[in-house]
Amino acid sequence: SNAHTKIPPMTQSDHILDLAGHLHVLRAADVRAPGWSPQLLLSLYQAGKLQRVARGLYSLPDAEITEHQTLIEVCQRVPKAVLCLLTALQYHGIGTQLPHEVWIALPEATQTPVLGYPRLRIARLRGEAYSEGIQTVTAHGAPIRVYSVAKTVTDCFKFRNKIGLDVALEALKDAWRSRKVTMDELGHFAKINRVERVMQPYLEAVTQ
Image (tube, one colour):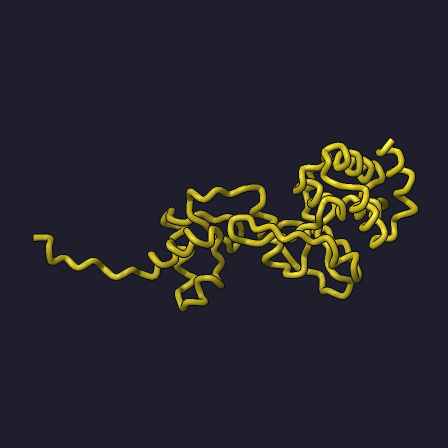
C-alpha cells in the first residue's frame, strides 16, 4: 500500500522554486546565501521551471515580467544608479521619448559601471542634485530608484544641451497638463539644479 510511502524531503530545487515565488526575481546571490548551488538556477531554467528575466536574473515562468525588468537589473547591478532624464520620463509616462539606452545618474566621483547590456547613458550629479528627489519603487520584489517627476523635469532643463530643449519643454508641458507636478515642486528642484533663471519664462508660459 501507499500508506507507508515517506514524503521525500524538500530538495534544494524545491526550496529555490519556493523562494522564487516570494522574491519574484532571483539572483545567484539569493541562492548562495542559504548555501544552495547557483548552478541549480541554470538546471531549473533548462528544465523550464524558471524563466530568465535578464542576465543572472530568474523568475517563475508565470511571474508577470514587465518592461521594468531591465530597469530592475540596472538598479541591482549599479548600486548608486538613479534612473533619470529620458528613462525617468518614460518610467513616469511623460512625453514621447522611447530611449534605446537606460539613462542613469551617478554621483560625480563614482566609477563608471561596465555593463554589456543594456547600454547606459550616465549623467554625473553632485550633492543635492544627485541625492534629492529619489523615489524607490518596488517592482517584482526588487527596488527601482528613479527621480520624481518634478526633479526629472528640472533635470531635463539642466541637461538640455544633451537631450534637447524641445524634450525638456515637452516634459514640462506634459507633466503640468497631467497634474503630475506643482509649481512649488518645480521651483524647489529648479533651485537645487540651478536652472531657475532658465526655466522662469517657460514656467510662466505654462501657467498662463
